[in-house]
Length: 385
Image: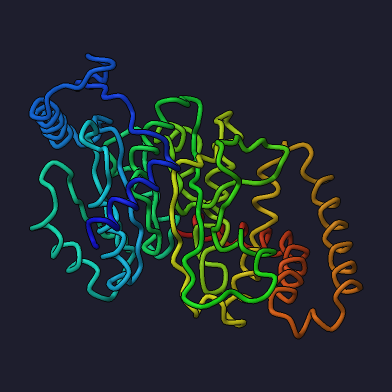
């Protein structure tokens, strides 16, 4: 039964991700040496090992094809399932790729989990571990960008479970779209309990992305972007567009909010394309605790407070004063419309309350972000003395 199930899963994965690519033997200089025919498997392994040795000898060089980064905080019990998904990837024989676990200041046994996997881990797919003491996913991703040894870097959270063809689909899309600075996955929820009624109205805020079976480009005027979960970025785009210190990197309330959108917006502002890649399928495990009313309201508060920063990054500098006032009026309109439409449900219904919380704290966001920027500038200035 296990073999039958695995075969069925593999077939389903390729149905969504497309057939495996034609075997292109790629040398250390990344030129194609054969099209439409496969090199012997031992030759592929030899080439991959050569590139891995070169990568080890030149840490700052982009020698590999893909780096998959798992950012985790206290992920001792969640991390094994993600690593198992990466162990099961299909069609990667022609790729030189690595896995990097960035431990974001965990206090549990995350490091021991990585060590326990090393004996069974393939020798030609490096499994690396790094500790990032600065709390926040934004800091973990920044550290990974400097650690990675490939031009494409795929980010997974410790509750993301990529399909069997995710790695191949990510690499193929990056090769086919050289102007793509970042591209997101097709993400569906794996729910421990049934979501609350009308959950579809807020599902995208929990990094669920279902935009159909075809790739789509995120046009700047749409004001919609992919989440960091399952996002693949081009290292060149990040290094050339994203500042070392993100405004939203530190927590807003109990968690960071908006720092992933801040990164993608910087890339988009510098002319890089942002895409949705339907072939990169992924499940996002969502435990029952994520549907607790208190958790959701705190999360939506943080998202709302971050909105002024992400909104202003999407408009030219000279338009920002005008757009800030326009957003202020629009947020007031949304609050009034929501109240008139739902009335008592604004208090009694969790989804409706989350929406009102988002609108209210989006209204407050300009004042909060202004204060936050001044605090950050003061902290940087005072640290020099």
